[in-house]
Amino acid sequence: MTASAKRNSTAEWQAQDRKHLHPFTDHAELGRIGAKVITKAEGTYLFDSDGNKILDAFAGLWCVNIGYGRKSIADVAHAQLLELPYYNTFFKTTHPPVAELSKLLVEMTPKQFNHVFYGLSGSDANDTIVRMVRTYWNLKKQPKKKTIISRWNGYHGSTMVAASLGGMNYMHELADLPLPGHAHIKQPYWYGDGGSQTPEEFGLAAAKLLEDKILELGAENVAAFIGEPIQGAGGVIIPPSTYWPEVQKICKKYDLLLIADEVICGFGRTGYMFASEPFQIEADFMTLAKGLTSGYMPLSAIMVADRVAEVLNSFGDFNHGFTYSGHPVSCAVAIENIRIIREEKMVETAHDETGPYLAKRLEEFKDHPLVGEVRSMGLVGAIELVKDKKTHKTFEPVGKVGTICRDHCVKNNLIMRATRDTMLLSPPLMWTKGHIDEFMKLAKIALDATAKDVG
Ligand code: PLP
Image (cartoon, rainbow, N blue to C red; front, side, top):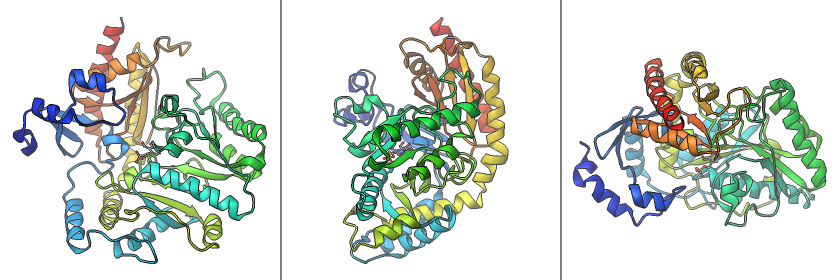
């Protein structure tokens, strides 16, 4: 039993937690069933206050790339806390961890990125990018260029601006979002759109929707396009190979800045250090968070391309920043995290070994009566549940079957997430083939139990 599990019983922790407003949580349901109390984690396993050992196939929230319980990260954080626990980077000040991490990120990321700005979350990073985009076009004397185009079902965070960039209707409702200056197009969801065209044709058609939207709004009013190379929370939507090169061409043609939100994809998730590489995205901004510290400390980084940085830097102060921008402990942890990812060859393993093995094993689910499609790249994947495998028709109401399946996963000590009726998978990159075998066994139990419930 862990120390915190010993201090209190599950019911006692849950009673204390009643005062806590949780993110993305139905509080009526929480009140009925109580929160699951996670007390410890090691490798890819979580331990709860009832003593269950749970396989985390979701790396926390797509973030714990190196796995839990890394002592060297704790050591680095401890040493940094003693040496310099805090200082800011405002007003021409710096400190060694932020300087060292900046050099490292510039070396690691695509060649156009030689500048980096820090935040604490993917949300504030995307918010900051919008501020930079506005500043850029104002300095370029094109102040009408304001609207940012993104995709329905995209996820870019929870601040007012990030949620406006995002295309989640349920986040817009009741908050009067999106804010003015945001427009959305359909996601490149080949399977969900029926899969009748070849993926390559579909990719071009999906990219063309961007051009249509630009023409509808007037190119002189459109500032930028933002997208996740693979849409994560929207259902692990892996675009056809033709999609991003065409998007890139359209952005060039109409003079739009291009933002690659690599918050999930970055740091090895897809079997590449950054997904911009396989999808051939040459972005003006890249948003990094999650895998940057593997979630051990909050930190985000915005990579800014030279052509943008030159304009931004041409004008005195950029009046923007957070008390914790470039926090020394977070930066020190990020450096150690990147060292681990590189030294343990996690990206190469996801690319050459575990990624292909996961893809092969997921194929076995294609024969399951509930499974319409499986898809994955590196160690991010999805199992899509449908009512009719031939027509791709979904269950009614959408989301119910996904929730049933997710609950069966939890009952069987497996964490997978559900978006609509798609089960999402994004495990720590330290997974071995053995972990994938264990996952397959537990996921099959959950899928079979769901099929029984659905009848
Ligand atoms: N961008 C993407 C692609 C994300 O998946 C997320 C979070 O899941 C965010 C941005 C927001 O990051 P955060 O939750 O750190 O604000």
